[in-house]
Image (tube, rainbow, N blue to C red; front, top):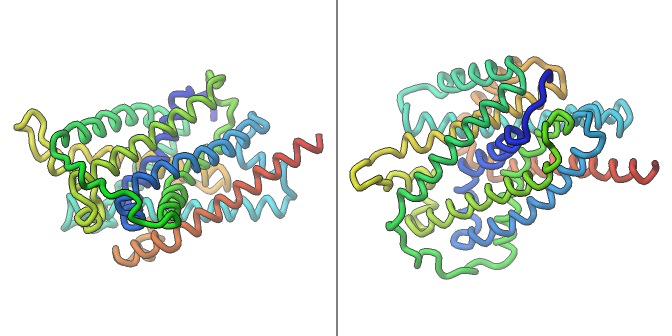
Length: 352
């Protein structure tokens, strides 16, 4: 990395990495698990994510001039560090494949029904290869620009549905037992918050004006979960839980009800593009992470990713089952590795 990036650029990537998985299958699966109590699950998942953010900050602050790969090599023996790096990258690669398939299949299903998914995948892949070829500085600057566009589009979606809500759809709360609500919270954390650890590949010393680093990470995380809560509430009060769980993309469905100034209609396809922005940045970030951790060329990672999900996710039903059953396990393994690194850092400090 030749140039430093600003803290503003860094936190916009964090925003994208937290938001993009939730806007896909995250909403649908949370609603299936927790139903009306999804609002409570989101609040609980926010506090769990703050714990993960604390771990993230501790790892970042350990030898801030080094990236994650260099920290792992210092903390663990040579063979162990290799296993950790390969396993971590493999798990993130699978996560990237699911996100890639999710966004590309959505584009196909809603906009280009007669177009093979491989065609859209190649176009997205070319863009990811191009931005990675320009370096992380370009990824961060593109993310900074797309962040503001995403916020504007999200606000349009929220205020465009104003007045079409039925608050009674939020009642009654606590339809489920406590364990079901917590299950929804944990699922949300495992699906959404794991991606933030890809930012560990960026040494803290490469971030300009990082004195308020911790504060802005917490603020960004809080904004993300506030948006999640607003989205879930809007889906419930506009569609109702029974109708919402019939759609794989309920967030997109409620956008079809948007009307601006009472005469500008049918803008849902324009608004939903913010999810494409966020997924693009997240996939670019994962590609960069794997490339820096393994020294594998970014174009090889992208091409392998396309081949993997083109073969493995042969239909949407299998994909949905995979996300529901196996992504939490994969995310848990990533979290276990991160915790192992965090514990090793604590032991390292106590021996000094």
